[in-house]
Image 1: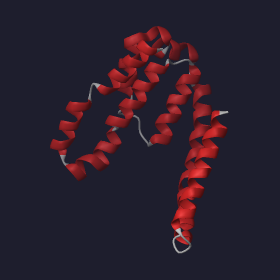
Image 2: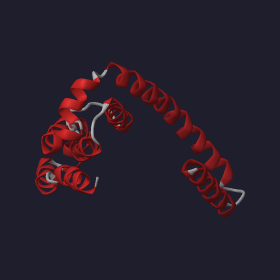
Image 3: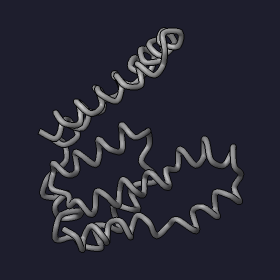
Image 4: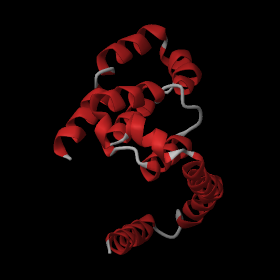
Length: 160
């Protein structure tokens, strides 16, 4: 039911924006929509198929032992350490998180993993952050934000 409500809301919002655009801007909006869809859709399909296959390859007993409900803070810390070296973009990291959940990982561990990847992805740091902002700004950001993956996992551990 949530998917239906969300879909209806998104379609309504898209229709409202479409009406606000005016006839002159609509061809450009359609062109950008098509190019974004052409760029994104294959990645989503590959990520979903990959997550399904990856979930089947993960040994559930090992995942549950390392990242399961009984893992507690150890699982959160290990998951947070595995986030930054994960290569690829959001389609990869979220697919890995989904596969880990399916294989028996706890929600707090997966939240710590995804938060850690989001904040400290080595590929994003090397390719974008250091060249664009410099290493001083990067180290300051890392120093200020390093506790967040652990805090997110810990809060989830307390709430669940």
